[in-house]
Image (tube, rainbow, N blue to C red):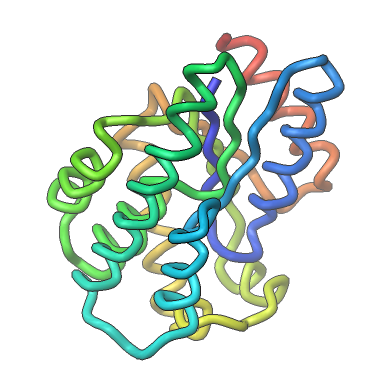
Length: 197
């Protein structure tokens, strides 16, 4: 199973990705946990460049994320799935659709096309979207990178974009209320995935 986690920084998605990986491992499953951008030596270099580097155009940002994703899909995700392992990723293609496609106005179709080429069409079985109010998310996160330092209006646009994506792809994106206790959300996520698999 290939499961990705999405949401604003501070939504709790990373915690939920870790809790699901732990739950799968406790069931005796082999799990590969990764993150985006990153997860490979090249991906970590690109992560530093895109999150800590100089200001850049929206398409340059989208292309760098796609390059990191191409490497991760080719070197980690596809081989792990082929070997029968579960893969859980903290962010994947939907991040680019939300941040660059919708919030930065590049267009969902164009950004999706770029990423489908970069990943050879590798999409997750399920995308877990953890939703919280953008102001709450910002208050929870340590503002440390170039994208996190964007305005509240930008983060509101990203939140709106994620909600739009959930409506566009209801057969793949599972939305959860991230304002509750982490353990409660994790239990609901495991139950939904169990029902669907």
